[in-house]
Length: 78
Image (cartoon, rainbow, N blue to C red):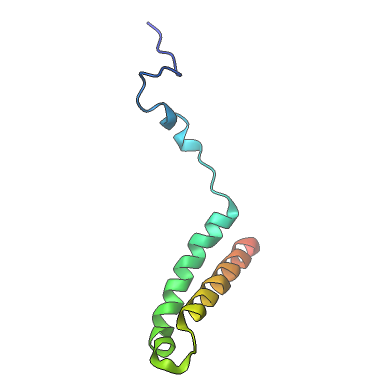
């Protein structure tokens, strides 16, 4: 008895090639940048939301973009 791979009755047919998922470098940079942003945000959060910064959410977004750029440069260096 042979089991066809493209049978509609096979419930998990999309998981056959699940081990070969490719993560592009920008995805790795975003994930590493997010972790870096979490660390930096933890230290600067009280200062940003104390009223010294005009728009703290914009500052958060800027820090996130800088963290992604720094992590991409780090990934390219290694």
